[in-house]
Image (tube, each protein chain N blue to C red):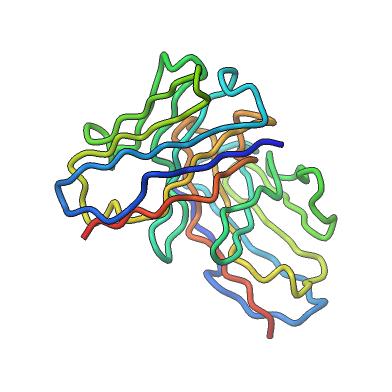
Amino acid sequence: DIQMTQSPSSLSASVGDRVTITCQASQDISNYLNWYQQKPGRAPKLLIFDASNLERGVPSRFSGSGSATDFTFTISSLQPEDIATYYCQQYDSLPQVTFGGGTKVEIK
Amino acid sequence: EVQLMESGGGLVQPGGSLRLSCAASGFTFRNYGVNWVRQAPGKGPEWVSAITSSGGRSDYADSVKGRFTISRDNSKNTLFLQMDSLRVEDTAVYYCVVGYGSGTYYDYWGQGTLVIVS
């Protein structure tokens, strides 16, 4: 199984700060990597697909990059509505996808 | 608008069974593979099972293989998950999920149904 390791597991930042989350795959997954946002009591929401493509309707302050085993998710200017848990997900082994452990983002 | 609505969750004792349903609307259900993804309290999502558009092929996570069975009724736009021999560790919110834009990402999720094994 492909393991996805996310870091940090939680972070606290101020409104307007740049926030960066990393995700490392246990093997080369090319760009087969998606990012989701989950707010409490809600289902995850797709933000980024294929490592760097912004889902329609998602604000441009969200971005993703990386390939092979190392990936980065960035919020360029943190907004109060961005408080959530963020997950990476690999799909190299479809249909058996795996998710990272999550990063909880809070406002300082 | 694509909509997925799960039902059938509840409290069950270890070793018991439960059948989840997912009613789909807003898209041509028979043309899409569909998945079940679960999320235990405080944990990340975990893929559970997938079924192809025709229902001809299904796949399972090792953690549920031999105990869960996925199926679909394309005439009723409904997805099912038969869960047998339930364990405490199966406690989770179960989501019906479809990759509508592409089979490589999950862009539509249901609201989830809670299964508690205790």
